[in-house]
Image (cartoon, helix red, strand yellow):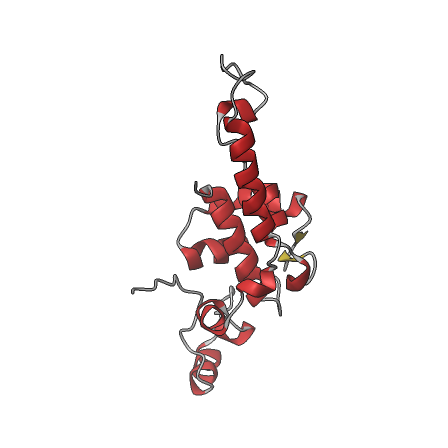
Length: 175
């Protein structure tokens, strides 16, 4: 069994948003940071907003923020919302399997899914946050290059303050 990319990205978005909770975050920055498709991420974010895990602030200066504190976002609830847990045909609404009336597979797999979610229900988004992840994903507002033209004097002042040339970057970790 594996989680879909949709759910994987959803959990990554929540982690990123929780770590950068001092400001609104945007989809482009998250996509660039993780090196993933912005269009795919937009679908993921839409699902997280609809599920009540994220709040979207529209307009100039808008972005995303957690809909509640990280310790209130249950990982099991997120995965249930994002993940289609139809492991075999007979667990779905389009079941046409000949042996369904006598088959025990759906019951056995249903028990496994229940155990899986019981385990995930014991964790919150706050449990996924740690110092190494924070160090990789956190960017203060001072570290983000402005999205408007600045004068050479401002660049010099930023350089003297130690902030010149800093912007959101794609992070890759090699092991």
